[in-house]
Length: 239
Image (cartoon, rainbow, N blue to C red; front, side, top):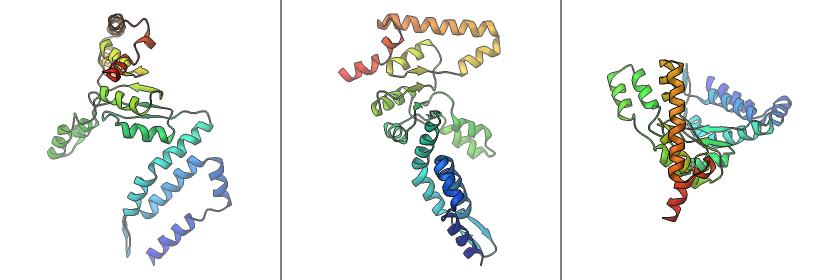
């Protein structure tokens, strides 16, 4: 019957032939991804005549093997000299999440926290019903703030390359992010807003941002960026 056919197909998928084993040796990350996609399609929830395969196993696979798949991907790309950065978008990173990502082998993190782009608000504006729109807006500010996310990552690892983004608007915010321990501070919207006003407005904003950063460095007694980086985090550890 149809269900037996599905199980038979799954059985064949679990016994790879010579060509499959060769692909697994050559590109383990891609092989794991392709195999996961095949199993995902085979055990997904669907109804066709008398055939129905429940998707619980698929959901268990996703929860169980996501970290393993990421680790495999990181190893595969690292062998080609390609680093993998993991980027959060708008919800921030907890210390536990940062540790898990680092354990998977990511080369760096972007801890973008609450305060910048909000995908909950994006979903709200795309919602087809008033209820969904209201739900998205209610969770529009949900997440770990960027400042807290920086500290969480540094608690997990003092050395992993770290980009801080999410709600940064000026040179003072850049200085704060660096002083908390980020290697790089990033912002997008302020530049895009000025770019729409023209090239001169954008140049003036960049110069103002750099001036604000220099003033912060002078006030903090930092002669250069390395001298500013991590100063607030160190003060917290002594408090």
